[in-house]
Length: 385
Image (cartoon, rainbow, N blue to C red; front, side):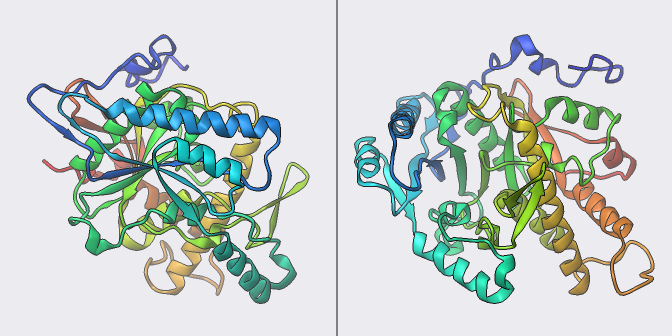
């Protein structure tokens, strides 16, 4: 990690030798209430099992069950509802394994993704490569609650990849941290809280951004934006099915075509920042220090894909917002098409106003680490109190 980030180090708690060591401890006199939070753990399998995928699936179900037990009997903690999110065309063996975990199971319907793929074919023709085999958006929406089912926005949903449950103590700590942050944010202003995950986010880059040696732009959002590998959203959040793989065609990644899609969290979060003046927050301390299995080996190619998909999503959202008069142009418009500089300026202004990095101190109080650009613009985060 870089050592010279200004006079005062801002990441003392996350030195390499301390990663995973810091814990959030519930105060004896203050209860932490997770009872209005639903934690959705994604455990799914498309197609039939082979021996390796069967064992991996089984371990995922077992670790989900062990993780849910972490909340049992913890003093001053009202436990959350833990559910497993899966696909409704899961093979029979998988359904039996999940049933044995003893958790509530919610299923996304493959027929919905199939209908969406057929519609895309009619609308965009051969450009669409969608087959309707799978929809992350539908999985995330499967436990969505309607606004009238929640008490204002005090409830929320946390999405977590099942591989993170391999370290239940650390994951529990992260979830408590995100809920504390959720409780302290100004009501009605929050779109998404993400937790910093090693191998998903770039800790060194975030250090440099906060210290002022780097700036946030479209080229680095893919490494720092909240990611639904571990994130919290208001209970009635709805993710767009347009993120299904292949609906908008393919994109070139290192010489091979990859379907455009995924990154539901970015599209949802960026649109909320742009259209509704809501905020996206990344909890950088404490962090999820355990490397995600299978993520690190291909992390650079994942970054490249995210960068290209984020760019497509953001540019499309900006153009639509300007056309609808939701977002004003930063400069005089000289032609019928937005320039690259105009788009980048709108994107940078949007993230400066609505993307924040947060940490919790030893008393579990939220501290926002403003970037250099945010300080220059005198931007204040909407924290209660």
